[in-house]
Image 1 (cartoon, rainbow, N blue to C red):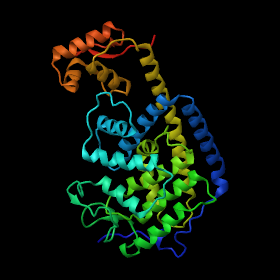
Image 2 (cartoon, rainbow, N blue to C red):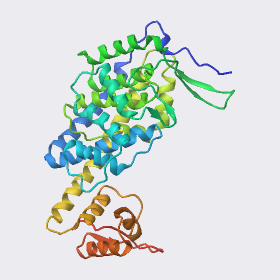
Image 3 (spheres, helix red, strand yellow):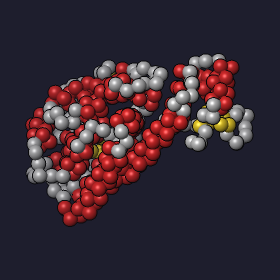
Length: 370
């Protein structure tokens, strides 16, 4: 017998008249808006090429981490390749993206690069179709590009002792509830745009209008609204990367906020704090972009083969683990001897150095800038 948890806030008579305590959020909101302004100022000072690189890195991270929150791991190189192609940027020999990656990327770019366009049913359906291009989520068929037609529960636990974490509104009320949400979202409101992003994320997740993909859709809606808050399509921070790092708290807070009152102060507090931490982490992304720019400036006259360029790009983008000759041979699909010559030549040109740590396999890293 399932143990039902309720009542849920969408069952309250005042739903969806959300409230919060402005005094409790004022200082936190002010600090986040200051961080946003400071980061946007740094982006503006980078120049167009570096702005594009920062946007590419940020959007790649956003796509990867939003999917990881739902347990789906996408190939980073394919995601970056797809975004670079769609933004008209140099792909640097990156592999082509598959259909699944292309759909997720198309959703994210529509949300962030077309942020000023109204949010409509048709747009949400197009996003959902992009998320599930085959009509399946794993082994399960998904009703794609339309509202769910049956009940929706989030359940955990063994059979016979299941726990209902959440029960969404019934299917027959979805069209009216979505229309109410869209009318609010598209209307000019006397509400800080960052707070609007937080409320929109929570409201959409609560409605849970699709068979699957509701979390990713909610985060895309929040990204759209945060882009409006920034006033530019240039992206310098990833909210999903920070949410993924705090995933358990994210899920716990979404669950607990579905019961009790319509006061969203705890959710809004966490959202602002999470956004603040995302903005702090963005400083690292910009530092990486600047390091890449300094590297290419230093080696602008150094002749490199296409394979060597791909190797250097992988290292500059944050290669995980240790680079060895055998790893490079597998990635470049070349022989061990060819990989060894590539690396030896890069050492001679002052681009790579041997790692000092010993072991069965010699490893290499980028040389420090001179």
